[in-house]
Length: 109
Image 1 (cartoon, one colour):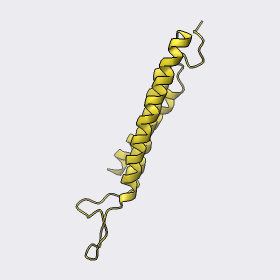
Image 2 (image 1 turned 90 degrees about the vertical axis):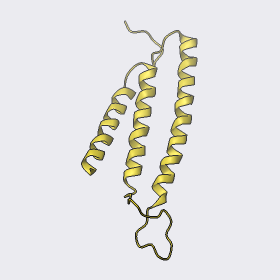
Image 3 (image 1 turned 30 degrees about the vertical axis):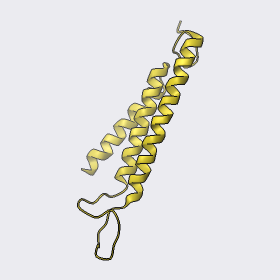
Image 4 (image 1 turned 60 degrees about the vertical axis):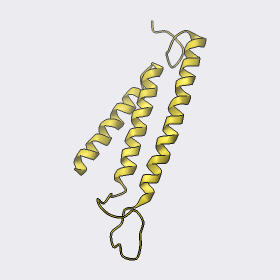
């Protein structure tokens, strides 16, 4: 299971970097989204989740789940949603001003 999660994080990171280096704004936005998914999975996997364990430590629990990675992932999801919305608005404004959706604002020859 760990190999599958590591492979998935690697593929998402690879796709995110590839799409972020493209010359169209939609590809860049999609690449940043894939990178944020990869980071969220990485943070979630680092929490060493335990099945059936209580999320809060009490006197009788010897094995408990760590709530910090879950809180970090929840915060990262909210931040990545806001970042994606902001970048999409910037891309639409750039397309309206320049007439194309290239990152540098110039048409291909």
